[in-house]
Length: 626
Image 1 (cartoon, one colour):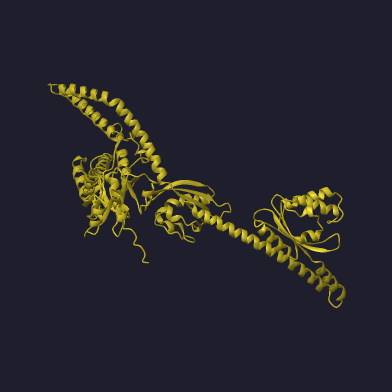
Image 2: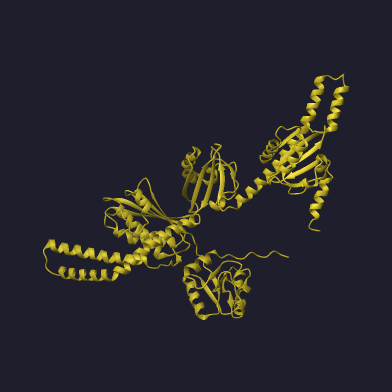
């Protein structure tokens, strides 16, 4: 009974309305009707129950003569049912068979179906007739105008009600669409023919870091910068001309890879824009491609290394014996050439093993300017005649977390490649390093012939080379892989003077810290202490929670690194004003691990992971005063 109360209240309220009302759903079945609806049309009880078919009601009214004499009653019924299926808002006045006049106002519902209100206007029409009959003083024209104005006012009121309902539905629909678009992890926008934003789901900063969410009315150049706009403009022009575009671009300030779809506006007023960050997808795709090639190299190496090594050993031994003899000059030259070729084969085998074998980044504090000066000193003796190497290092003296071996190998490889690309004597190679936002850019530029179109597409593929049999095709591939291991990117370009290769590495400044290391396992504590000191940090050790509490207020401490589960309690209990980094062997999702206020290092971890975690650890927010 209680469950039926809302329906009863609704029905009672509708019965108090002076007009007749009916609501039919999208399936043309009666959903709601009040008592005036039954009384006005003298309907039987069976035609006022919810679920009654509209066709049955119309058939009853047609057969009773509600719509006047009908030559073909079934056709009249079918006509009105078909009208209902394509329901349109309407208002009209008609005289019933019993001589009474009614005004009929209908409006569709957003959920499907329609509502119709019937108003008995017999008295209004009678007054209008009496006014006409008894007012001989009034001109016929005035009376006509009065009647038309009265009917027009009633129709206008009905139209306004329909418009208000349509506006309510559209407003609710627009709000729902806007909410949905703002939940999408992509930027959805519309720009006009002047490249100005007319709509945005406010997700631009999530796709293009550093941009502003409030871009309505602003141009693309204002929102994204002149560099990104220069890349986008040719594509936008083609889309504005009616040609849809899908392409990828690199957002230079952040290094992110963005996929953009441009769809012409059918009304011809601009272009719809969908921008998605596909950096992870591109990295995974490239890593899969490189992994496949490295796997092939590994199979080749493992299958051929033994036999190939034996052959090279025999060749080198025989040629060494020949070289020791007193041979004619031509023969001696051939022997030395054979020895050189065999040694190149041995070096290639070693490089295959290095590219195919497992590697791990080894981050440590690095004085990058000093390292690059060392690279330049190592490279200069190997340069061609007249080729100059210029070093341009615009960095401060603060140490950075880098893999020095990988940086050195990469820079040397790029310099030697640039040297090989400069044809003839003379030329210039520039090794530069500078800060770019949160990145460090290391670039090698030369005055050679530049990259071919094919090289720009394939230079990072293992075994691809343009050196006509003189190169292994592994140099740039190794540079690319080492850069990726350090979470960086590599870009190849041609300049007006030659080729340019730019490595972008995350800028991780080393803030030397005094770390309170809390770990109850002596062996693990010794290993982690070695990692920390290798990164340049000072370390104070504690073997228990109680011991750590006694040390946590020592002057000079800057960070606590603690295991989550200690023999006498939880490392979580050390949380306080100092920044804290927790570590554990518990898997993600464990209830204890879930209580951590920030990132957690999973044991075992490498020095690189520890260094990255330390660089990102910040002090917890202070609680608000009660």
